[in-house]
Image (cartoon, rainbow, N blue to C red):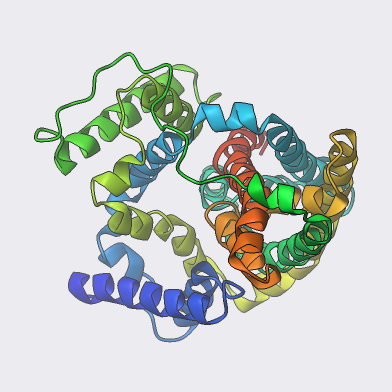
Length: 390
């Protein structure tokens, strides 16, 4: 396929996927739409090299590293300290899903399916990329496809459960609302963003071009790769990228939300999922049918582990079962969907602006932090660990 045609096809698919996601309020995600399109396309009319011909695959791995460093720059350590109970609940829920599947599911299905399914069901695209790379290294194309299947299915499962739990929690909070509660509603933007650990002076705005920001992200990505290689693969380079992104943003070397400030988010986010879609080239209808049973086992065990771990730990911290379960399910879709869901629920349950603001202040901080902890941090670390077990 001509490179321009392939490039155009990718963005048309993304554009249609975004429209469908907006129309269905996230029930059908862009990733799901693209997954189904490419799956059917490779079975029927698309050449097997369609994605490679776009040129994205040549830079996809490099851009994923930049993306992980960028995700690190969006994380504020101060927020984690303030919401430490939420962090603990989300972390244990994510660990419960990941390692619960890895340990229990192996009793019922092939060990490879269990090890691939655990980190991805408790994570997202980056965890999927880590596990797909590990599966390719051992020549298991069926596991590469299974990783893509889990990645798509998790949104279908997680978003409805989280919506129901958040709506129930919002109604519970609304019943407890008093005038005093409304007066204490948190005002967004009152907290300063500058880190107390910042020791490197910022680059003057006139010199801080998009190229400078991307160059710094690339430098950190290279350093992360060198560190990971020095450990003979025991540390996954994407995990190192994430950690260095957080630390170097805190001390002032990297800008907050770096890729967004460099106006590069569209192309980076477009290239990052390509590696996951390429795995569909080798998927056959027979292969997918053979994965239905492992998929069901992974999902059922994962949801049971999620519910038990979330509710038990939530009880210890005096969180309602609705809130703790919603925090746990954030592992299935992550930020920014956690932010969007909390806002939608607050608007639908609150009868006036004061109630809506109150509900936002009670739901959004917890859900945002939980989404970052599960998908952006813990699942990446857990995937890096489990990848070595394949």
